[in-house]
Image (cartoon, rainbow, N blue to C red; front, side, top):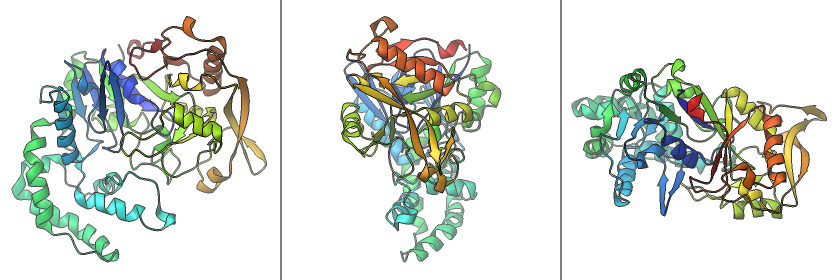
Amino acid sequence: MANVVVVGAQWGDEGKGKIVDWLSEQADVVVRFQGGHNAGHTLVIGDMVYKLSLLPSGVVRPNKLSVIGNGVVLDPHALASEVDQLASQGVAISRDNLRVAENATLILSIHRELDALRESGSAGTKIGTTKRGIGPAYEDKAGRRAIRLMDLADLPSLPEKIERLLTHHNALRRGFGLPEFDPQTIYDELSSVAPKVLPYMDAVWRLLDGERRAGKRILFEGAQGALLDVDHGTYPFVTSSNTVAGQAATGSGLGPGAVGYVLGIAKAYTTRVGEGPFPTELFDAVGELLGQKGKEFGVVTGRKRRCGWFDATLVRQTVSTSGIDGIALTKLDILDGFETIKIGVGYMLDGEKIDYFPASQGAQARVEPIYEEMEGWTGSTAGARSWADLPAQAIKYVRRIEELIGAPVAVLSTSPQRDDTILMKNPFEG
């Protein structure tokens, strides 16, 4: 049986929450391996709707161990708040079902404020972040001045670490013309939340190694999407971590041999939140209709998502950079009723046809999509649970996507409900 990595194959918001929840029924352990509380997941289970942004999706399922890995940047106050919110919905969180890596970097108020300052600056620096401090926290991690979860277990050592952190941050604040941060404020912020988060702390690499050796099934859950990867995404309009499947090993403390099947999640169309290039974006009534039918608003921020046709060139690229073995295609039902449907199959760049998305920011802004047009379908795919329930043209659309991206559709999702899913290939069976 293979361990499974779930990654977004577009710019995020592909419906990973439902698919991870659906797969977690077969898993013993669910691991978040990157990102922070900037990535929202909505889980619909019966009449209950759970909105998660930091906790792994498997946490709402009984008898599953959820793990936040070292690759995640952790806002301890956000974690405590999310735990309380789930408790109010009848989901009890304890050390029995949640562990957090001791070496996870913490997000502080100073990171959130710096994030907001940058985003509210000139248009040239606007990336479209959620202003939750994710990027600045990753910067401190790379700069070797971060405060980590384990530091909360040794409060007497905190003042020296805070001073080192503020040597950098107060210099930035002076540049913004702002007053310096008081070290005592940071200390109070951390010492007050320590009792709420330390009970979950563990040497996660060791825990997961033991689970793997015991033959447990591990599900690795990514946040955002592969096109927001800091190396392989639409830089600089990306997140501050690696979001491709390879990060599952680094961000959890397990070696690459622990990664088995890679399942990419892709919508049957394309959306994007925030700034950055989007070749197949629609600015017409069709784009508005996709957004309305798909309820395209961010779980975390409520921001309206930009909408466009499926871009097979981009997804084919993420199939390669993440080593995707199969795709879970979501929201097929949103395309019900369209007379014609277009698929982006390549680009024109400065008069030349290309079959990949260039890395250059300037070139990304200049590409023009090449479309292939298909007949739509009048029947409904909503709630379909077998191929026999799908209109013939919908099946043709799915098969054409498979051909264009170079990967099979292993799972097809036809509504937010977890049971409205067509399974062609069980990822846990390799």
